Amino acid sequence: MVRMGVVASSEPQREIPQYDRYAIASLVLGILGLLLPFVGTVPSILGIIFSRRGLKSRKVGMARVALVVSILGISLWVGLVIWFFVYIITGGEFM
Image (cartoon, rainbow, N blue to C red):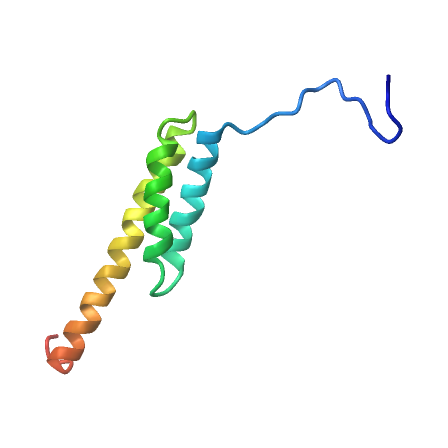
């Protein structure tokens, strides 16, 4: 029986497995962590958390790349904050 307005499809709906979603989300958060100035550590930390869960998925490569990008994002912003404070403390004379 076909209801009005509902089209029957012979193809089953593909659903993205839960852990694949973690891999995708971690990559997006890792990239955001690199691009957002000064608050980039928050998405990077979330990217690390999600990539750890994403390592259990079929998209292990994407989760590994996301882990590396997230760690780079944290390193970049923490390094910039440290450099900024050293620059302020020394009056710009440390170079």
